[in-house]
Length: 87
Image (cartoon, rainbow, N blue to C red; front, side):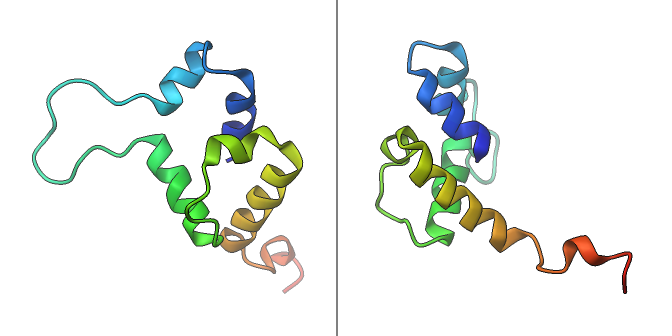
């Protein structure tokens, strides 16, 4: 999610941004639909109770974006992750 904020602030004219929000081309395989990076970002925002917010606007404000990124990372990393040598 850190990278997403950086790329979003770059602007829509950059190729990296188009890859981030673009839809994969080609034939859809059987089964579930293809997942885009944008879908993963929206899922992460739902987990930190930011549903309904436009992530591209949120990422433009780097302070608010970092608060959301830190909240999302804290959900994924156990509190004692750095203490594996002391136990």
